[in-house]
Amino acid sequence: MIVFHHTLYSPSLQDYEALMQKIRPLLAEELESGLGVFDVAVSEAVMNSISYTESEAVTGQGITICIRRSAGRIFVRVSHHGSGFDGNGRLALLRENRETYIAEHILDESGRGLLIMQEGSDAVRYNKEGNQVLLVKKRR
Image (tube, rainbow, N blue to C red; front, side, top):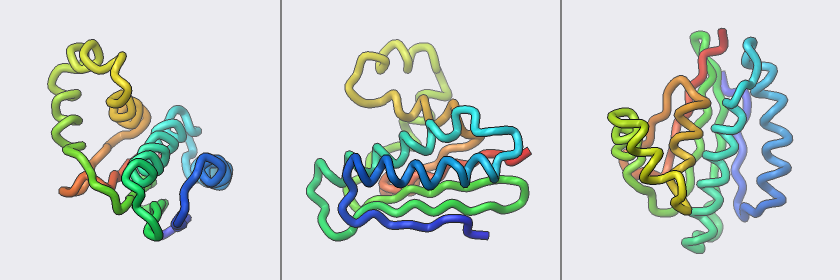
């Protein structure tokens, strides 16, 4: 069942803040155990999509956020039309050796978002193009 579906065509920081004000109460309502850091994971996914869209001057296509619930889980899919990256490859590196990954990327300008999304979610997956991320959280 789709709980929320929205596209930001000209995403900006103000749009992001307004969007998160709509999303957080929905997530809190859906997650019986409370938000924990899942809202931070979702926030990071949305901000990353806005950043990729802005940096590549992708106009008119924006980013899309879809929240759906099914079988005791909540699914948040965030997508954009800019170029992606090897998110699943980077997640595999993070899973293989967490301490090394953190030591190598903690001071980088980017790279910490994957750690945040993994910590706040039960599962994180990217599509093949790397421009769509799916965050999954058990509703409990």
